[in-house]
Length: 69
Image (cartoon, rainbow, N blue to C red; front, side, top):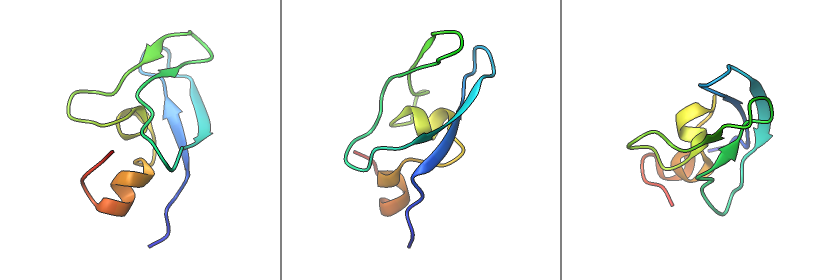
C-alpha cells in the first residue's frame, strides 16, 4: 500500500487551506494556521491535526488502518 504524505489542512476557524507534507515518524498534535494564527489541536478521538482537519489521514493511520502513534 502506498502511503500518501501530502494533505491539505483546512482551518475550522477561518477556512484557510494549505497543503502540507505530513511527518512519517510522529503525529502532529498542534498546527498553527498561517492566516488567523489559531493553534489547532485534534478533535476528540483523533490522534493528530491531519486526521481532524486534513484531506488525508496521517501515515500511521494509513499504515495500521486504525491505530496511531
